[in-house]
Length: 391
Image 1 (cartoon, rainbow, N blue to C red):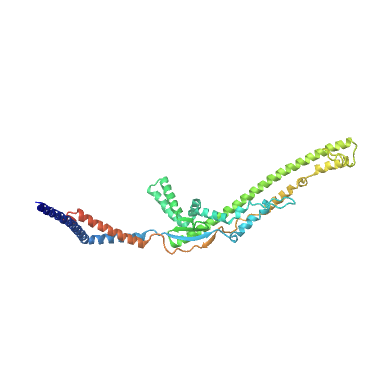
Image 2 (spheres, rainbow, N blue to C red):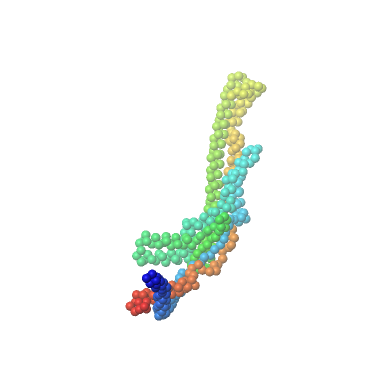
């Protein structure tokens, strides 16, 4: 009985093992049949795949050949050296004596008010800021012939029924798009070198527009710097004029006070019957009479006849000298100087930025292949006579 039970158990275990061992084989067989059916479906629909690939590839090639080309011209610039702006440096430093402080017999205090105007790093910073300025870009584009033509084509759209607001939005979008194509970006963390570039619709066009924009920006920065110098000089001139006015008022007051003191001293001297100088007589008094009545009369007449206030206030001579220097010194507005230095000059671009025709063609071919395979598989799965359905 026990032997029979043991035999049945062994038979059951061997049956279960045989079932387990045969299940993967069945699964693998199903997978193999599905793969064969899949490849058969793809082979059957090969002409659909080829047709889709060719159509999409041809479309991609046509797009690549007809799409708008974009080219970028570049240059690398850095802060200028003294010889790059020496003429401007001379224009600034010719006013240095006006700003220095003279202390009579003491040392001259050299002013630093003009130093920032000729600092190379500051000059270069102004050029980069102007290059990236949206206002400067717009001013350049408005006078550029190529951009005028593009903008005029947009203006023709107004005849299509657009409102003034819609047309204005389109113009602003056009300007914004082109602003992004004019850039100056640092090369490295130190920001000592900058890459300046201009992207336009042609190889020669981008080269010419970058050079024109550099010259446009350079002229604007130079104009602004000379205007700043003129403003600083005018501010100093106004300061000196105010200083002169104050010194003249002080000199006149001192003259009047001294004349009044002398008059009181004369009256005292006449009352004391002192007409000639007397030693050790009231030298430290408010109204000194030690020089005598005759000398006091002469002193009063001399004080009343004073017309040159520099006699009373010597500082007026220094102020007048500075004002005369300002009147005789001219700021030349037509000088040519540079606030940057080329590390690499502008050159014609070798390769276009857009479109990348070979890449577009390859992507088009891949997209067409994927589209064709997708269509064939959908037909195989959901078609009435689909291969996968038949299997």
